[in-house]
Image (cartoon, rainbow, N blue to C red):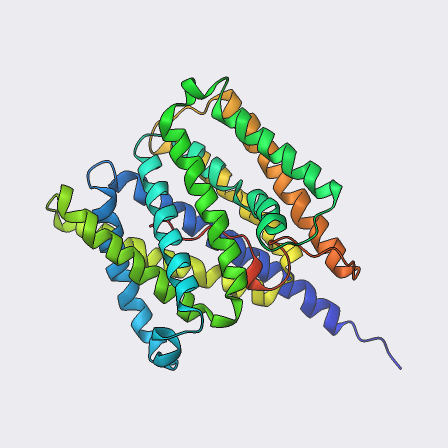
Length: 319
């Protein structure tokens, strides 16, 4: 019989498409973050949360028509859904808050440490076994965070601590997402969006600024770009293995640096660049290590960044 090269060719094409969609999704997330930074220069965090959530909810209506609404409104473990959604709103709010004081690349660097925190928290909260190799990588990642903070905390200031707090909230969001992975993506995103809308509705009236027509369109565009970015990332994970596409999420820091320099005239600190490199190397190592253990059938469980799309550490839309 003649050889059958078609499956390999299809697999290669699918992998390339998967990488392309991941790069596109990360670019759109970065555009979304840059838009958010520009907007919080004029509008409060609560106002940005409120208006971007309204636009996202309008898009979600289409998807809600295709599912059983009872499973969305009254899911199993509603208390955990509530806590997860509240944590999501907090980490998004912290992200915008930090962006109003810090360069875009600095904030993104701290948030990219989230998967490292997930590995540590998986051992503490989910009681998953994490070997000494990954614990070493976690410690290296924490070292990267300290380097990014600067020579001392006083020079970094409290805005950097806001970003670090937000990245921990993001890690807790990923942990709770793993626990609720059977709930369905529409349910999870709906609860996140509604909670962010409620947070925004409470905070926005305190510092309301009447938006111009142009800015209003930008505020609503945040939710649309975020949904499109999520769609691109999800398509990437359907087309190619996670081990192939997920490491490309660290292109987020490249775009953050570029947008920061070109749009906001930001000059990154040397310590931040070194810290970003250490965090990226540690995060990629942890992810690939977990993929190898999982592929080999190791008894040591993956710690939050491997496997199905629900476990993928893609930063959620911030705007």
